[in-house]
Length: 261
Ligand code: PGA
Image 1 (tube, rainbow, N blue to C red):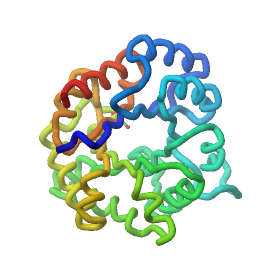
Image 2 (cartoon, rainbow, N blue to C red):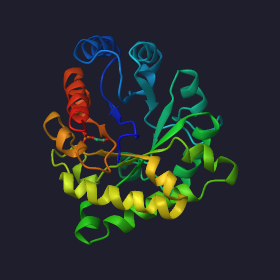
Image 3 (cartoon, rainbow, N blue to C red):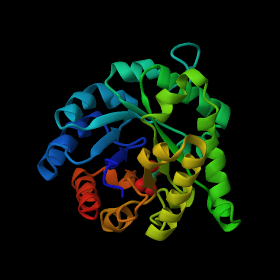
């Protein structure tokens, strides 16, 4: 069934933590979890902390991600950080399309597409976030919204398409569940994940649908991680608030992994 899809647990620290918090986090994470095995673990800190964080993370086998990488390799983009710079700092990944980028900063598909292209050209892998608002869910539009967000990945230049699709990880994060304490139920998450996988099958074929990891995000905590991860189409978790504390994040990963045994 799902056993061959290596689970991914990603921590999105958003605009939290100071430089002084970085080393204690990894010391605690190491005591609580140790070196990573049986899954992939990714941490996305504020970009200014990456120089300090990446070597500590990599000692434990933890990968690093940008939260938001610029839409070109270089140029007049005040306030943005080039994907090339993220790569130089040891990042393997970048988030694209996080709900806060879409809804707080108003990022639309044309900009997100440029971010995907520039990041891929720089050698970063894409963690692509999708999800509906509460109004969209109430209006019965969840899957049409998610599919329309996913359709960006069908608009890539031919030369880049395979580079994006090979390693891409999709994160389903209902906007109404992010930072609210109200997670999607395991059944609600599974329903959308299965539909995302069916959409991938229609666009890219059965093999891609079978191998692409789909994470759930939105108020993941230690006490719901296990039930969520029991769902057959959930291949990991994208964790915001609960990832800020190393012991809690380690517990989420352990519960997620145990529930799949
Ligand atoms: P949350 O955030 O876990 O705090 O709800 C998830 C996210 O935004 O990725």
